[in-house]
Length: 88
Image 1 (cartoon, rainbow, N blue to C red):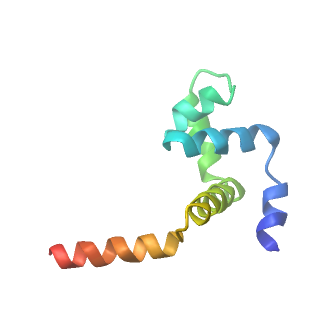
Image 2 (cartoon, rainbow, N blue to C red):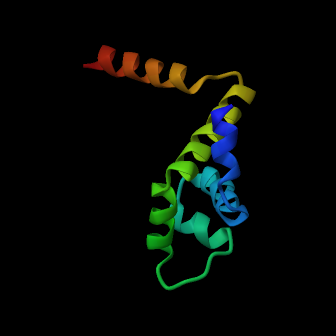
């Protein structure tokens, strides 16, 4: 599958970042927990999050977690939109 090909392009360090990012969706905290060093962790996190292969891996891992819990990401989004529309 295409997603697997893209996931292979992601470095081990970037994979660690993704796993940490999924904890709290805080890029700066995730990059520090993943062991990256530098003066601007916020900038480094932003650059990683902007990489298509990293964004795809985050989406894949989120979908895997949701599926494991019995949910589908698109179903959650649609449910959220329906609730919002009912409240307006």
